[in-house]
Length: 295
Image (tube, rainbow, N blue to C red; front, side, top):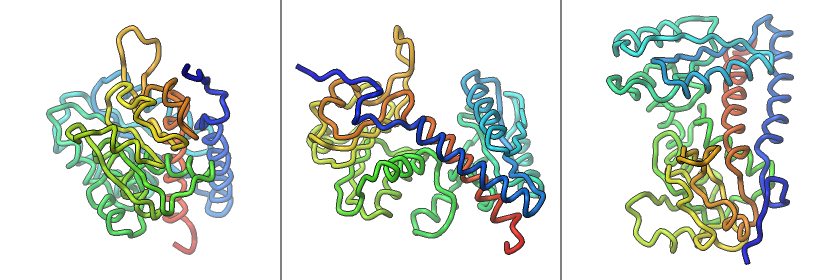
């Protein structure tokens, strides 16, 4: 019989608790920076269109900025904004000495080239880590901001003292936002990395090899306990709306996977809080790099 586990089980990684610790650390850093330079870290969020979920996410980020003693400004553009108008706003924010970090809320309206907009963000202010140049720095092993969700996963694993070196890691998903940077960050930590995706043959054979398994493919409960190596660390980075389900559903079938895994993240309360914590951390770092007397 499957062992039913709740979010208080010993093998469940608590992203909410870890994120609170990180946010407290960020607040201390922001206070020190303000004392030294009279400057408060400032995040500019760009929200294009009227997607309700995007508005909710931006509001959460605004609230978190206030919580850690940082400023947040939301630049709202209508859904019919042109490519030129969106890119012009980004360039003005790049030139604004009062702005430390720039976030373009995903997704943008379909008529816009989202990657081209992201590519307008200055590397020094790309706190979401999603421009082509910033991702290239990651691929080359050069310093730069890392995408918030994969960075948050690495941070969570570090705080749970997970060993990367020599581990076999499997990432299910190959998006630019999550799958690809996740694989590169794991590689940077000396894991042996395999990337799987929707066209991978014998997916279960691949996932059962993983010491660290990251599910980020956007398919509800694709990964079941039968696909998990006993004792593996399972990271569920999926958030899926399923009719009839009260809350978001991950890419991992939690009950069966938790009965097998050594460590596992829940949905919600696992990866999500870490993503916002990393955005705050990156923004504070950007402010330190730009505002500190030695910079």
